[in-house]
Length: 159
Image (cartoon, rainbow, N blue to C red; front, side, top):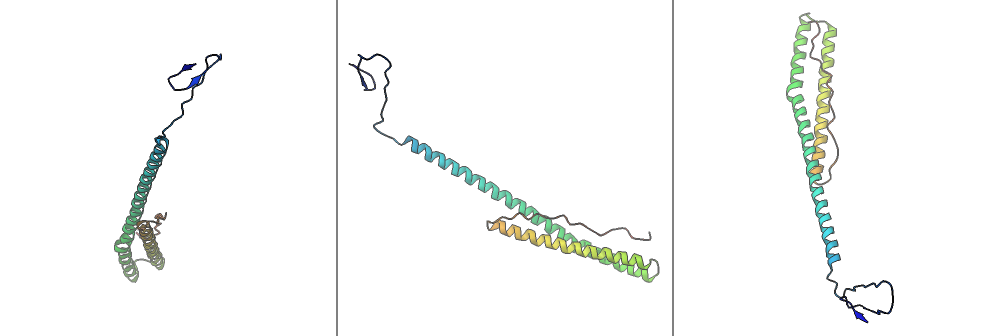
């Protein structure tokens, strides 16, 4: 009989291979500690991804909000008052018989188009505001700013 370094006993009278198996007497929990460490690392990575996604969503919705606000303010402060001045001038030109009724009607159509575009811009602003507020409370939405088509023309007929 011979004694191995692993405290396994085997008979030397047998021929062939010898297999020695170490049985752990004390389990220090290395596998469980490694599994918990991997779960913690996965949770940290998921938290980091969630924070980045929330920040990105907030930046996108704020940019959409700011763009819609700028467009709406532009229509309200510049385009609508300018179209009103142009319309008043065209009424004076019509009264002075410098333009015809069709040019006056075309100008009215352009003014109506500008008002419709201003209303659409205001609608986009409020949609973007709602999306931003939803993102701030933790329920982001994907409402983008739609392109506002302007039907106004800056060409005056007759010139």
